[in-house]
Image 1 (cartoon, protein in one colour):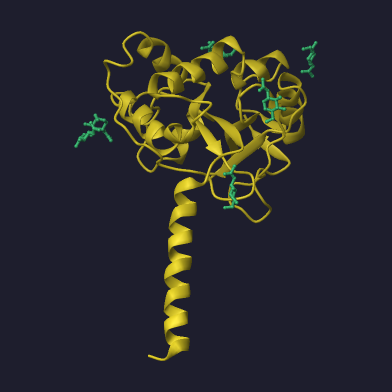
Image 2 (cartoon, rainbow, N blue to C red):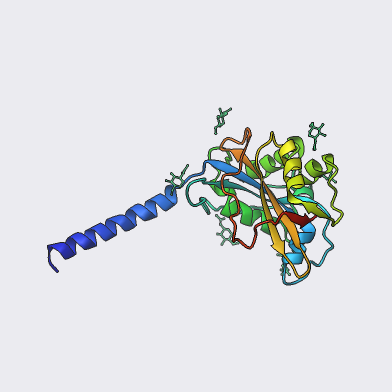
Length: 227
Ligand SMILES: *[C@@H]1O[C@H](CO)[C@@H](O)[C@H](O)[C@H]1NC(C)=O
Ligand SMILES: *[C@@H]1O[C@H](CO)[C@@H](O)[C@H](O)[C@H]1NC(C)=O
Ligand SMILES: *[C@@H]1O[C@H](CO)[C@@H](O)[C@H](O)[C@H]1NC(C)=O
Ligand SMILES: *[C@@H]1O[C@H](CO)[C@@H](O)[C@H](O)[C@H]1NC(C)=O
Ligand SMILES: *[C@@H]1O[C@H](CO)[C@@H](O)[C@H](O)[C@H]1NC(C)=O
Ligand SMILES: *[C@@H]1O[C@H](CO)[C@@H](O)[C@H](O)[C@H]1NC(C)=O
């Protein structure tokens, strides 16, 4: 191997190291607070939900996100135990149920913590802080999407609605910031499945969601949807 070969190998190894290091240090610059519409979640699942869903938007997760790069994942994935949650478990079951398997709430919360919450430093300091923060956002800070829609007289009646009316209602509850809406097609109709509210990096104010679902995506919402 000549000098060019050695230079090539050294450059490749160096690039690889930089790539690995940067994937570990990648951080977040905003949060996505994603809520899912339970009946639509059940419709999207190949096996039907065992328990009937409530007509509510409940929490999917709070995700530290990067507006210009890949979102951080699995940063310090410690386990979540029922002992940690003993004072808040009852509240979490209401706002953040595992819709697909209601015997496995803790498993759902633990997967969300490991994949997303563990990357939330400094805004999120530990497991319990992660779950308490979500309770505070959904209840105290009134970020309950069902309630925001209900205030604008948009109730879950399974009607066809203009996407714009839904977006405007959500904007009205979020300081006029743009949400991210995710839809899915089933055999009959396109339905709204997720609403994401975006917050700044210290979780103090709403921001316009930076990465909309793009035209061509199967999750793009059409002008009229069912809710
Ligand atoms: C977001 O990702 C980009 C591209 O990987 C990176 O340069 C940037 O530092 C990341 N942002 C934060 C806040 O870590
Ligand atoms: C987390 O739980 C798994 C098994 O569920 C176990 O193998 C692992 O050691 C635990 N990790 C910690 C840090 O306790
Ligand atoms: C639901 O969760 C329980 C507890 O983790 C598990 O034993 C069961 O297999 C799960 N059921 C389904 C349908 O995934
Ligand atoms: C969220 O809002 C809906 C609609 O107003 C309401 O039925 C539900 O109880 C609320 N959830 C919580 C935890 O406040
Ligand atoms: C917007 O919010 C204001 C005050 O919060 C409320 O009075 C009004 O009815 C809302 N309008 C819609 C269309 O949601
Ligand atoms: C929170 O972060 C935003 C920008 O992300 C900044 O404008 C604001 O001043 C910060 N607020 C506090 C209380 O640190």
